[in-house]
Length: 439
Image 1 (cartoon, rainbow, N blue to C red):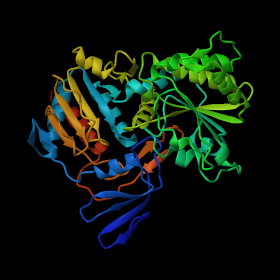
Image 2 (tube, rainbow, N blue to C red):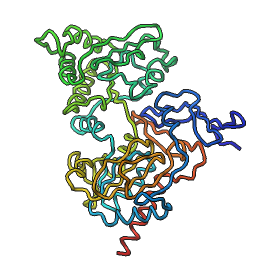
Image 3 (cartoon, helix red, strand yellow):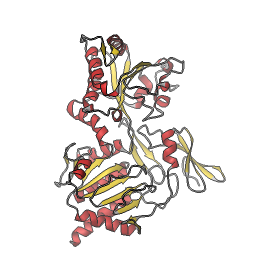
Image 4 (cartoon, rainbow, N blue to C red):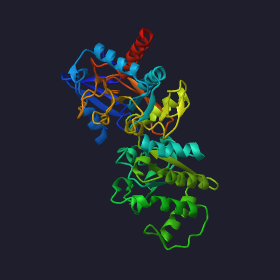
């Protein structure tokens, strides 16, 4: 008997429908993925460039290694536990995993006094710092799909990070309130050479484009915030954008019934980018004095939203946190894994990347344990490498969508001999406790 959502498409493959894809923060859950006789997945419907790459790179086998030599899983777990037990200040970084994996990681960090840092922390902190400093008003993908009439996209084309965003959220054919989505207005503010073709409506209406260099977004967003607040600016242009066009944009935002301002923090690669995010969120707050508006942070990859959500509900803090003191501490600067390794503060690195074989650990001088994608290759062989199953292909799991309001299940699409990350981490944690008792 086939499991729910799985059928035989022909004699050589099985077809899995309604599959959730963890390749980006949208977690599109309408994919059809076939598994061929060699146990390899292929997206056959509703795929995008990211999903096709994610499923096509899913190796079926991997061998644990200790000091670069093949080893049994038990030997690799024992060696990893030995390294962590002897460490005084271990860093657990990368953290490319989903909810169940992160729950296990939190238990291991608690027992070993580990510091936690996600590979995407530099960009995700641009949002986190704003929430902690002043709060924000953000919405969900579902509300955007049903209500937005003006979408302002700042500093990105979105599709470079979330390829199906416009297809699934803006140009959807049905809404709860009978809105004609083809009449939605799209404005791109900032950036150059962006792919704005997805902002063309089904009726052929082109989006408005106000270009500037990405590094000039701080002054542009500050100017728009001032204009929305009713301030007068004594300039003719801002970063090359005519003031009159920014004034028109401010008026359009005030006139909209439900505007949404979207951004991707990864695209804000300039100093103090959190202040630009704050300009955006404060503009949204000002608009809500007279109309309805919401922010929409997008992007998301390598399980970063799931990791931060899980860490926060367990410890009270997102990553860049530590359990070295025996209780949770949070400091975005002190617990930066890259800084700790570069300055010699960390004496062990545990790197986790179960979604992406290309996300390998930084070369460093401390003992290194890698638990991750079976196709990972290394310039510098880690002390221990343990390949694990890929979430959403080899084993089930749970992930948070980019809007943090919805969790979606990942399914096991094929039989795999590779263990889930959570199982391996729990085994290492049990072995560290045994080692500590022996010592």
